[in-house]
Length: 79
Image (tube, rainbow, N blue to C red; front, side, top):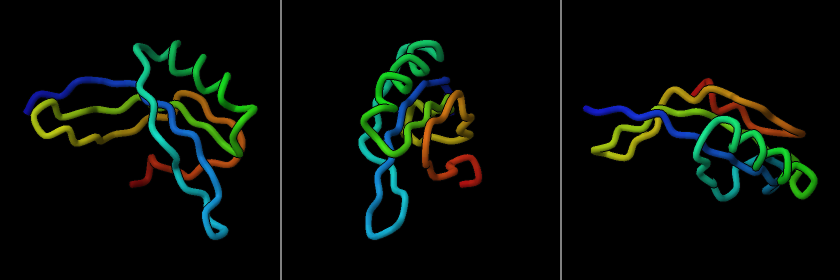
């Protein structure tokens, strides 16, 4: 199993009264993820940037670590 650190940005929206993640965007670095999240924050009820470990063979993501968050978000770090 080969793990690689990746950076993702998730906008959040409300669906039937719950906060749910929207379409994930990848970023090239932690700084880029923070910049993307900041830019998106005015257009969404919540946005969060994370660093995650990705198994390069299966594509599975694990160990999310919050870089920055804005507004209402769901906590992915307990999953």
